[in-house]
Amino acid sequence: MNNRIKTSDPAVIALCSVAESEGIATVFDRYQAQQPQCGFGSLGLCCRICWKGPCRVDPFGDGPQAGICGADKHTIVARNVTRMMAAGAAAHSEHGRHVALALQKIGKGLLPAYQIRDEAKLYRIAALLNIETQDKEMLEVAYDVATKTLEDYQNQDHHKGCHWISATLPKKRVELLSHLGVLPHNIDATVSQIMARTHIGCDAEPKNVFLGGIRGALADFNGMSLATELSDVMFGTPSPVVTEANIGVIDKNAVNIAVNGHNPMLSEVICDMAREMNDLAKGVGAAKGINIVGICCTGNEVMMRHGVPLATNYLSQEMAILTGALDAMVVDVQCIMPSLPQIGSCFHTEVITTMDENKMQGARHISFQEENAVETAREIIQCAINAYTRRDPKRVNIPNIKQTAVVGFSSEAVMGALSKIDADDPLKPLVDNIVNGNIQGVALFAGCNSTQTVQDESYQIIAKTLAANNVLMLATGCGAGAFAKHGLMNQQATELYAGDSLKSVLTEIGLAAGLGGPLPLVLHMGSCVDNSRAVSLATALANRLGVDLSDLPLVASAPEAMSEKAIAIASWGVAIGLPTHLGTMPQVTGSDVITDLMQEGAKDLFNGYFIVETDPKIAGNKLVDVIKQKRQKLGI
Ligand code: NFS
Ligand code: SF4
Image (cartoon, rainbow, N blue to C red):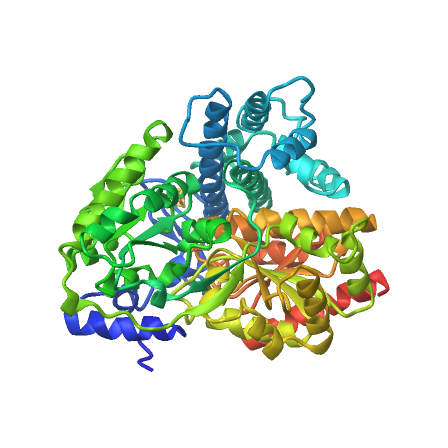
């Protein structure tokens, strides 16, 4: 393997040679061009908060120890990481707001392209949020649910926590967070307050700044919970579906359209319209019609709900274009590489931006509003069909690499499968197997891909260690993408890698649920906002046992965390009591005050803490040890 190409994905390696022979730069080349990366920045010691700067603190103690304004390393590091948490919270919560506003309009009958696909869930949410439903039409309930949800962006009463977080975490946890003053009352106000308090000359007490960031991270949790749950109401709650993952899902005999980004509002309608427009694609010679494939979290969303195959995850999004067979890549928001239009222009691929606040130089922009969703989706698909007619068959090179993946494990789907074993008390089989040790604990894999590691590699190494130690695994985001692409989300993986007792439990549940074999080794819970699904399951478990989340043998791991959203997620993971592993070095190590706070300090406050370990073999073992300690404390 060319070790310039930092990936463990054979499809990526194959397509990087295409890039090389065509003289096209990819993410791996740009990574090389950035070496060596700035040491001050890597340690979090560079401050650019005002124009007297940039200022940097010398980590060796020889040079300056304060910025021009007097901020020291701890203040600088704390402000930098806290602003990242705010940005993450803003990103997820904008997504959530978009979905909530759409639901509100659906409730008013203003969006004919959308429906309520999971009515039962709508009513469950109404009950959760204490909304009266008697004598109301379904659409009115939808309107009320959306309106109450939007209060989480508007409430000005500091003593009232956001509705969603208060309704979805165990009571004990909500009380603790409230007592510590980190329970957000309003998502927008929390993000805004972080920006204000980290402005030059404001909050300079590192711990105080950081705890402000934790409140932002919890606002992130609130935003993603509501985004996930309301998306289910509109688009349906995922249930297990068999599909495929990796670049081989691109089909040379079809018009291939990749949906990339995060927000399902447009990609859902594209899926609907693609069925209607299939014959148009056949009419121009694409024998297989239209083939929608997913990338990143939009990919996870449509994969979970419709079994749309996943082409790839974050780091290798450029590779889809390098196949020469991608006719359009449609992007919405977040984690979209600005390099895409340029690579698209080397082929016939249309790179299409759709959100007015997320454009890219060189891309075609087709503005999406929910009111004209059908027209927009049609225009985009037509654009892809036109591009197909310009495809050069001689440049098509699709590595035949893909794996079967069974996806769609929403918490409802997991409970559904468990209820096949015990209909009256679905959690009982899970609780019993955790107590008797057949399942030692549960691990949630979340987060991104990063050039700081070898793409997808740590996920696999850690998962294999945990599997052998009988740990039940869940995954979201690009972590889920990694497992799907590398064949760890299917039944064979369970047979191959699960420890004996884990295998027997997964087999019992899988058979009872009618899967004809075991559950997959790693359960696909969805996109990054769907991390809240894992929390719902954990909360149900905690409530059932009358304990807090931090008492459960539960861990989280983000082996390749890189985005501000991932920083926010990892931070709320800690705040809700999870030992949370990071496999990339967080940009905070310039301050011992902050690194201590993230480990021992957090443990004292939240009973959750960060575990930073870049070696995946050691990380896997550490997580197993943490689970053992948790079991010991529980006396099981
Ligand atoms: Ni999460 Fe999904 Fe992927 Fe990371 Fe980006 S796509 S929202 S942020 S890179 S997992
Ligand atoms: Fe420098 Fe202070 Fe300005 Fe930061 S806020 S750039 S440390 S003067």
